[in-house]
Image (cartoon, rainbow, N blue to C red; front, side, top):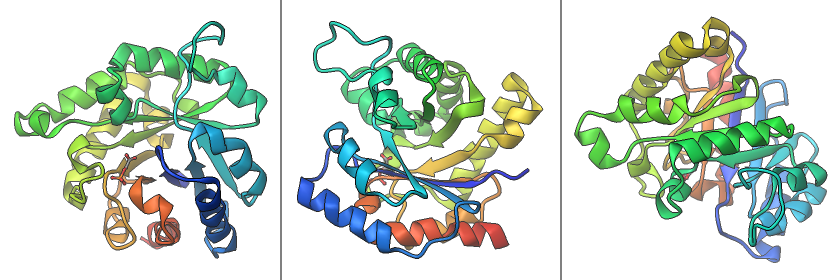
Length: 250
Ligand code: PGA
């Protein structure tokens, strides 16, 4: 199938120039598996994107954490996909649960953002995931399917399954819980976007991934990598990148 392992680091709204430089130094000095084994993408806040891009090793890429839904213009405070392309930023994270819940981004709004970002040539890390309430009421699959349905253009999308209850809580999904949803999502892709898309789309897990729990998650058949928040600001992010070799030999 040849789905290359993918590790994203979502720095969220964190960092000073000094801290960002330190993180980049750690990344630049790390010995990690080669580019044909793992794709590494780090996502600093907008204001640090040019700095990180200029300092970061060339085998790692950068992503923005959001972009505007359509062409730029009179949209105070927004950053357009064209601007990201102009700066040479190849990736953007869209539909993160923090934006869905805190900024009320609907499935349709996220879907339109994905479509516009793709139309401008960006690659997208699209996030889906259920709340604890939704999981406990048995609607996990219905929720993530509805979120996924709004998204199209799979050739340039990495799908991140991030259960909301696992994000920033230290409460990681068990490998079986992650595999169950990833497998269902792959089935959904198969039924709705075809065989090839299902076989080639990377489905990565996010939610309290750290250097200690990543290896076990990696062994799951449909876990093709991670989207990492808190631990991506720490040196253990390197261990998470290295878990690609566990996958390779599994
Ligand atoms: P976390 O965040 O690793 O801090 O739980 C993951 C994410 O929000 O992408």
